[in-house]
Length: 324
Image 1 (cartoon, one colour):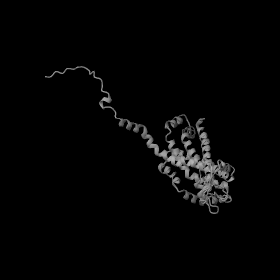
Image 2 (cartoon, helix red, strand yellow):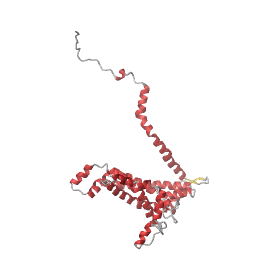
Image 3 (cartoon, rainbow, N blue to C red):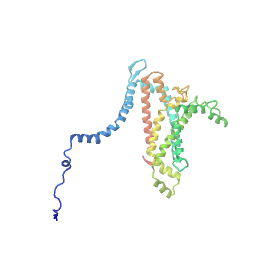
Image 4 (cartoon, rainbow, N blue to C red):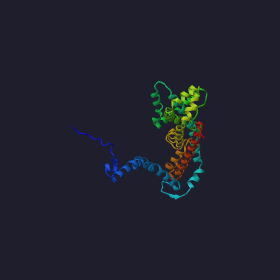
C-alpha cells in the first residue's frame, strides 16, 4: 500500500515561451514581418503597377505632348501653352464642348430618374423578379454597333418609325441627323436605352441594404409609400447616388461611341459638326489631322471639364437628405 502525500500547490514559476520553444530565430521574425506587413502590399501591387503604366504614365506623357507642336511628320517644337490658348479661341472646340454638355444633360438627368423609378419597381414583390432584373441588363451587353444600326433605322428621315409616328399626328418629318437638337435627342435615347438598366441594378442593390424596420416604423406612423420613398429611400441612397452620378458624369463627358456610330463611324459629328463631342474632336485632331499636340491639349481640357463637372454634381448630391 503506497502512501500519497499532497505537497500543496506548486510554487514553480511558469516557463516562458522563449525557454519552452527556444529563442526565436531571425528567419522566423523576417517571415512574420513579411506575412503581416509586406504581404498585403505585395498582393495589391499589381493594380498600382498597372495604374502607373496605363494611367499615370499616359497622363504625364499627354501633358508633355500638349506643350509641343507635334505632328506625324516628326516636327517637335516647343509651344508652351500655345495649344491651350489656340483651343480656347477655336470655335470648333467650343462647338464640341456645347454638344457634349447638351447631350450630357439631356441623357444623364432622365437616365438617373428612370433608373431610380425602375429600381424601386424591381424592389417590390412581383412575379418573375429574377428574369425581369436580368432583362434590364440586356441592353448593356448589346453591341454598340448593333444599337446604332437599330436606332439609325428608327430615326430615319424617310422611313423611320419615329417620323411615321409624328406624321400620324400631323407633324412634319424630322431630319434627325441634320439638325442639332434632334440629333442630341436621338443620341441621348441611345445612351439611356443602354445604361438605364445598369444604373437601376446598382440602385436596386443599394435599396436592398436599407433596413426594413425603417419602412415598418414609417408605415406605423402613417407615412404613405411615396413619402417613404422620398424621406427614407432617397436619403439612404445618397452614397450610391454619388457613385452613379460621378460615373455618369465621366461617361457622359467622354461620349464617343454612340455619336460616332450614329453617323456611320465618322468622327466629324454630322455635316456641320452638330453633334461632335470633345472626344470625337480629340480623335479627329490626333488621327485625322495628325496634330498630336493639339489633341493632347484638348484631352487635358476635357480632363479639367470632368473634374469640374464631377465636383459640381458631388456637391449637389450631398445636399440630398438635408446634408450641407
